[in-house]
Image (cartoon, rainbow, N blue to C red; front, side):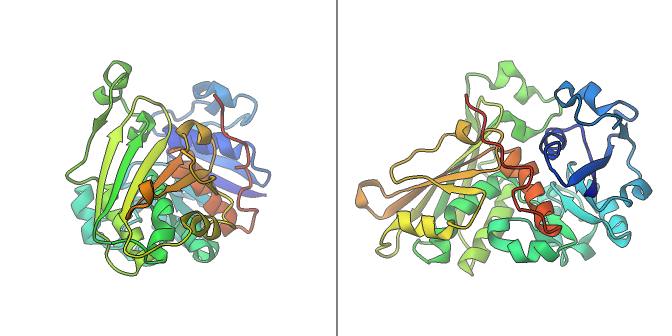
Length: 344
């Protein structure tokens, strides 16, 4: 049994960590922080957790308290983990950051996209990008994990087989992605109000979204050279879910694309390649840590279309964070994550 802490326990990813860890057989949540809710019992704020965390209450962030944990999750806005991660690492606590603080390798590029100087550039070289399907062995040895973003997870998993096998034109890759409103966080925003988001869909960040450099970085690693990506996210009137429709132009006869995808992910417990001709739905992964994929070649032409769906709060955030925790501590990779998706 290990002890973990959660910094930022009142956002959607924080409560999702609590929900998933409640069924983890080898983890005890020993500390959870929130400046605004300090002193409040967890199950008062989240009645769905009644009976799972008796006596656990929110506290103000405290490095000494968190440093007694074996690992600490940061479910916080960008910039917060910069201030505490180094201190915790010095105390021997492993850090799993769900924010964007350590995802980009270049501190200057991070500053350009996030509008502030990087607060811990010395830690970037040590940080391991926590996509298990790519970095599993490095994750096992890591002290500091940068959990991938939701859009980057869906896009990278969908394109990995094509890029790794050199089958598509890497100068012209398109990712047309849709997200539920929880992707915008729990903070009150006009655009997330029911009357604003319901019965409507809109694109945003078409000229440049903060996840773009992260996706390009990951795709470039897979292709072993820079990838030209057009990424357009959309807000859709649903609570959870990411649907990524990915387009690539074939540069050679690909052979059996279905077999390519099945072979690439045959040993991946969090990726499900669906039968040929399938069209995965976001509701089929709601509440689960699974990415479901389907690959199509319309009309037998030179375009390949990949459909990728995840729950943005699970495989796109908290579930993937727990996958990383499991790998770091030698547990079964899917411990606490095996519950099937919610239907309907």
